[in-house]
Image 1 (cartoon, each protein chain N blue to C red):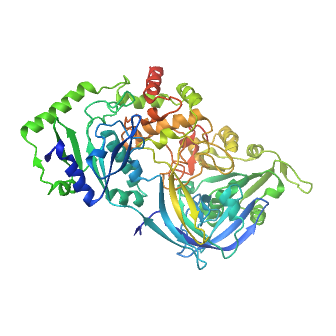
Image 2: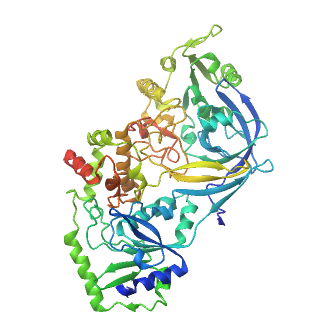
Image 3: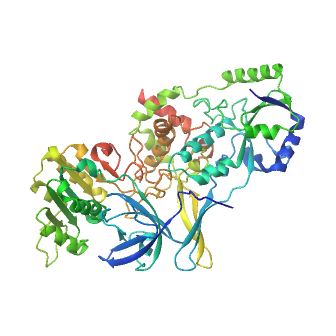
Length: 344
Length: 277
């Protein structure tokens, strides 16, 4: 195992060194306890103690709008080219919930037929994780899905062990980054300190739903016609905020845009939301998910049922963003609790 | 900016070599791809790209036994299809595909076939009907039941005349609303089913039509003791990628079906637990 030590005073050197090689994006305080991943050049811009950002780092892997194809209609027969516009970048201080989110997206887009835009973009991104030593707030449920501890998915991983950071080097890419920064190796005492942090988390983080994660599959298997969905649906305003902020929501729309010359343009992928009224509508007018209750149910099933069957993992990372952002106060943990209570 | 040579979003270039307005709302297109045959199977669909307008999934209505080009019948229903109706011979479009699970042609070999088409459902079903016609001796008895709103809404009139003439096919059709010169049946398509003789042990019922039709037609077929796994449907959803990713075509079913990859053809046994067909 390869662990290095960074004195807290030296974080700025680390960020500056990184920023010389590539753009660095990290959580930045936006006021009112809101945070966002933004470009940084110095450590003092970064909030190392933050609750999950408004948007997850998904935005770097699957941008809200992304060009997939350039086309040219000059000369009768159309010409087109599949293009990738991706810069080399590092995402710094990614919580374990968001690392899990990226892993979910990796699974989806590497399934055949593969999405090379996503897969190539991912290769350009260095991921540096950051451990949460305590719960961010009451909306999180990371311990329910086992994401309060790191489960891979990063090049480097930072854990606060008092006056210094202990950095786990997980990949060759990560190794090459810390090489030349003059970081010392972690001592036995440092490793013991890391162990203590992890041990303390066992107490601090708990399953707050009262249902074993494995049991959730059964709860959902029985819950298709639950009245919980009608309660949730009656409050939902179909704004789509919950899916936009979700680290594992990847549904998209494809649109064309044409330039003023009316001859050249592009095909673009944009984020879409299953909560929108027209999401499952066909041109003939039939809407296969007409009611809000059904659209909300669909969202939950895409987190706690379908991906478990397909990828053997929940696509809820426990970050709590959907609850934090919901204007109608639809609470993920309350919904799960109500559903579980009903299935007993 | 880098080029992705193996991108699944790349489009094949197709040129319209013939087009014909079939009804007030449906237009037929014959399309030749510059890189060869579409190489599809009956029941599959393509994504049609009109550059600058967008893309839409359209069922292929010709049989793969027809080489050199493939056919689409498009109802002017949405933004893209409305624009597509303005296209004609010589115009180019982008094509992705073919996509989707085809009709289970191999399983049908040696069996009797009962085709039930409602409205535009005849378009995807025609890819299979013409395939069966071209391989007629591989199959048993063939019945075709067709339903449409009025006589003027009937698609593929010339071909229907041929089906009516053939001695190896039983064809009947009905219209919801009659017209002065209409001499045929009037009534819903379900009214034609009791008159068909079915050997439930060796018959496949293939049903394609608007969502509302399925419930009633399937009920009639079950009454005839046709097993659920021998009732084949083609479901409609708005597939935006065709690759099981965009999420738009997912069916509310415990098995998490994507209509574009796991369908659009399903047996009734597979999808009977869906919230909507």
